[in-house]
Image 1: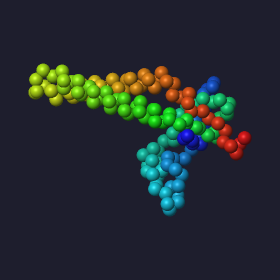
Image 2 (image 1 turned 135 degrees about the vertical axis):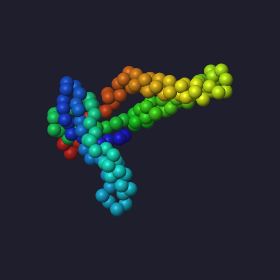
Image 3 (image 1 turned 30 degrees about the vertical axis):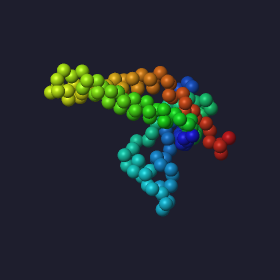
Image 4 (image 1 turned 90 degrees about the vertical axis):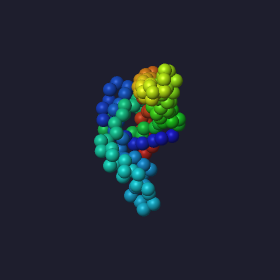
Length: 147
């Protein structure tokens, strides 16, 4: 399970907009034995991460919550957003090269098929992510020391 602490910024009905505290990485950036990847992520991600979650615990603005992402959700989402478009890009390129009438136009058809496959992959991934309601899997819960 992936967990992060967050502060509630805004509450709208049964949903809350939360802002994740801290940077990426394991939290050992200040120690000598840490790899420092959290410092690198802070360099490229200057804006705080904000996302919408279900507010099942009825927390209020300013409350600190722990956001938990269930096992497998990150893997499924990355497969959807990376592997699906990449697969359609390669498939489109192969189909485009197959449909070419002569050897001179084969590269052009392959490039066009790849672009169409990639665009179709992103459109399909977006449609599938909206259909799966990915935002319903992350739920804020009060940290154990608050209960």
